[in-house]
Image (cartoon, rainbow, N blue to C red; front, side):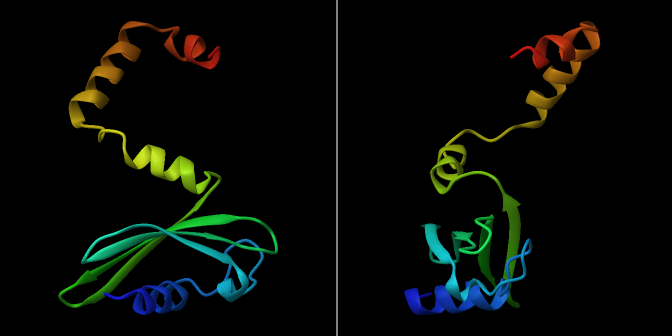
Length: 111
């Protein structure tokens, strides 16, 4: 997918800001990552400064896009994308810890 196609697809899938309803054609668009089959974009509305993360993937039956409203900056998105994935065992270990220590949530709130 060439650079022109990526820009066209991101604007077709996400045309208006979900917060203020202004067109994204006036917004700032950053392509954060790209591969042969997909790209990750970060869009910021120039009117209300809200931001969304958009993933567009090429599938055999067409394009699929997901958008998430976020308060992260584009650099924070990239920082999190470099972290290792959370696995089922991580979640189970946390659940076990929370079950054993009834004050776990209170301790967590202090940080």
